[in-house]
Image (cartoon, rainbow, N blue to C red; front, side, top):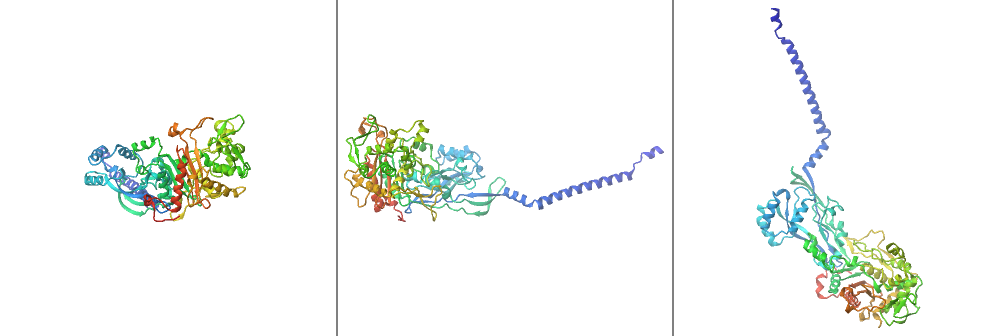
Length: 627
């Protein structure tokens, strides 16, 4: 009986145990609920702003909209760089199933070159926002546009978009001055604000387009859009319109530019015209040029190879980077240097034989006139361009005074205020030669520099700006292209200022030198007497730059030489001589006779001063005829 009683269950004990477990479970659940509520309170209340921002970041995206690019005008209101609407074939990569299938489908509709496909595939690898379309074929013709439009319904991810693209209406004559824009590369993005340029198609590469990129680009617009989980835009929440780039008005005269380019004819060369009263560049010509429109949407390999391989180097900007011996155009500056340092005077006479020798038994440095010029003075040395006078003057001065004086006129340094890429040229010195050749400076080196030969090299812009400073009697303006930016006068921050005065010990030497250069044209023995007969006075100086060195007794025979070995023909001039409004430097590469650039310069003077151009240039006349 007692054993059976021991096998009965203790229900009260089990009930208490169950109650304890329920209480423990309830407490545990309650603690979890409290923790959960605390966490929820923390997230929903305390951290509300943080997570609201994160949620918006996942849902809302900022999309930039590139602004319309500023236009570029000449001094008379002629548009030199315009924006033109075009229709382009674009593709949204996220909406296509297979690129090979897309290639097959499109090849049956329009022709798309291998270069265009390769360019598209390269851009696929670059960073972009989701669902941003990429241009496959720019500038569809009307026929291509119509054919694609018919089949758009079966081409997922393909669309035709209207876009603004840069257009240069006057082509190659202006290419080296205006420059061009090109497709943005990853290297370009390293130098600009990536966010601002997101969606932009091109960026300024060279010339004015490159230098004033930030000004011409403007400020990108911003759109706040709502996107889905895949990044596709669903709706626009807010919008800030882009600010168009500022327009540029240049000192450049479009008719003068085109006229100068045409007057060079079949020769390669350069013409730079400057307003001596402002330093504004009226013409900046480098021939041959190229069509800058080829670069806007991406130049083809074939076209680029043709430009690169051309023996005439159309991509080379001769006006900024061409290094030429200034030849006899340096003589007015050499004469002023001699006067400044007391090595020459207006009254001292010199017997000019047909050669000059440093030592009695030494090398003979020949004059261009083999029989010599007889007794001359400084003025006559300019009028007749007497080489031997400047041989002896340079030898007396030595290179240091020459270097120091010519530096004041901008030789041997980049002076352009608003164009990149100008070469410094070479204004040699004793220190330069020691560093370059480990040799001292010899008297013969100075003799060669005295007539603008030897080691000395200058660019057309340098020679033109130095001529402009001489024309304005020492008021040196750093050459510049931009006249106004938007509605404001252009200002420059180069650390040098916009201008400076070249002060001579005797300021009367400016007037006397200008008068000597005027007689280069008016005197019966002047080397530019062919320019006589104008109603205004021209001051000028001819020059003939040797392409190769002649031996001491070697005669120059142009007929026996290849054209590439002919002398360069140079001319500097300004007009009217007493109140100059335009100064010009012109060079015909391998042109031989300096009559060619002299005639070109006179034609430019006539056209500019009288506003009298051939009728074929009326299309460049403009509506804002401001001088």
